[in-house]
Length: 443
Ligand SMILES: *Cc1c(COP(=O)(O)O)cnc(C)c1O
Image (cartoon, rainbow, N blue to C red):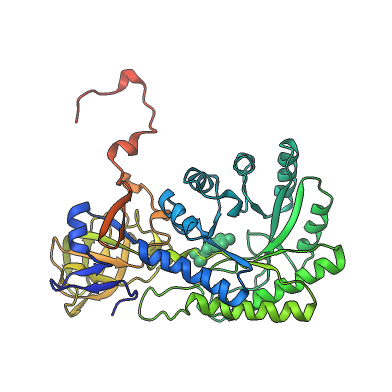
């Protein structure tokens, strides 16, 4: 009945995740609470890895897109499953490095990497840097030569596929802050420039066409464009591209209206296109890289809240206020994202009326969902929001000085904290106040 097979309802009529009663988890660890199912996250990693093995003879690598959820524990988990990772900042890079992640399997993205971040990447021995533009290329070559290393790179290409809408349309391809465009010759020119650089080795090309995409066609289309470009690079510049990185963006089921394919189906279809085209163009099969983030971790996560008040405004709407909000899940206020919400302590009760689930921040727009059909809700109830494993913790903030919730990882009958709840002292730890002016003993 739920989006994800690890969710169910027990004899107490409580929502369960894996073997765990969510109401018990809320009691034990407090709310708001992120809960993540380790077994499901590992299964998703394996599904991708197996798909590459099955449909592409293992000649590829799946990277977990760290920005979906970046913690030391999940970094290590991903490495244990044999995946690589992509990072988009020095902070994500540092997190993986400290978790002991194999750095040669890390790809570093970003449209404006700072000199410090590039330094850090080279010092940590990052496998590949995905270079965005010519300024970065020059900066990287300079830093690499100072360090006397040759850095392997991919270029980020705009393949001219706009897949943000369901009917993907090939417009606005140049209008993106990421990467270099094909149609104005920019991508070709940057490869030519890189050939003249002493401390750069071109290993591949990369593209990423968007996120939460359900159709497989945009991915196949992107693969075609990229293979043609790879073939051109060889013909015109003699560059042998080894790696084709097609990015992430595979959609997941947030509500019953969403109908994504299995990861293996995306990989199957895309690899078929790559194989056929490589044969046609007479090029070697590239080492294929995919970068799923959301589809590895979103469904493995839920968020639990406690209801603090219920305001029935006659002929207007009913607000149900919970003890979190945009600070732990900014996706509704940012994108109007849809979620499935469940009354965790009365999980099979029939929905009776639409409610708006509101956060506790001082913003009218701080909502988690609007007009969702729910059973009768009472103060003190536990509310679950499903599929919050991706882009929730990683996008959370301390707005209104609200401490971030902890992440509890469940696996089998075990439940453990992998990220601690922030404290008020965490919130003020970087504040600077002259000693003499600290008011003592006021709290
Ligand atoms: C965001 C991003 C991803 C992951 O996207 P998902 O939709 O989470 O799969 C992968 N690669 C790049 C370059 C990205 O920016």
